[in-house]
Length: 311
Image (cartoon, rainbow, N blue to C red; front, side, top):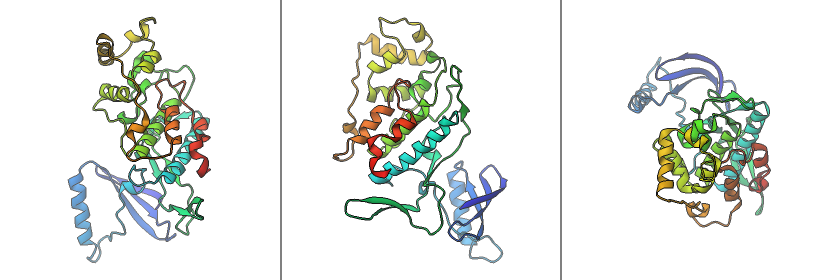
């Protein structure tokens, strides 16, 4: 559906005038239900289904669930993962080239056009083609710029951005790094999406709060690189350490006082099934790193071998 204009908004939904993209000129009223009260939504849908048979009442044309458009770990094969993720990186590269950080990259903000399907043209070649006669502007759209901001080098930004499960370490560490970050926080989000898709575990890092989120990341990426990144090794000045949020300091103090050293876990441990594909895990090594300065940019990631077969 292509939105024409907004007709109204309420506590439980937004209402739009829209055009059915497949039927081209068919006008419809698109009601976007907000996920506030699941029970109310189910009741309204049930009533509408019954009322649709009655005269002078609105008829339901279709019920579209969010999963039809969001990237979901169980709905995409490996080729589609490469295809859609490449388009996500292309979108981010364009955004970053305009000097804009998205700051909330997550599956719910990535809409994909399911009319693009995986078709094999030969025994060795695979392509993505449109199943509908209507033209699609893009296989993927990155939405919701509500937390986006312009990047200015040296500027201190609010670290209370991004959804918890997709927050980069520099956002979780917070004031220790002075709120100085850049486009790299978006690439951490891409890495989290890729990990969720490859390992069919969404979200991949599932913390109960920000401190627990950092602990969950440490359990996968280990302690060594984190300590180096925030300069709190015993041979380093402790100034940045003192700036850490108290609850984060307590978490790291536990590791130091107990002499706990957590090794980085190999990605292959998380694979749900055997595979010979290693380029996806290699890309994760470039994206899910503590040090944002070492994290690959969207432009670098676009040219990773992981995307060779979908370019």
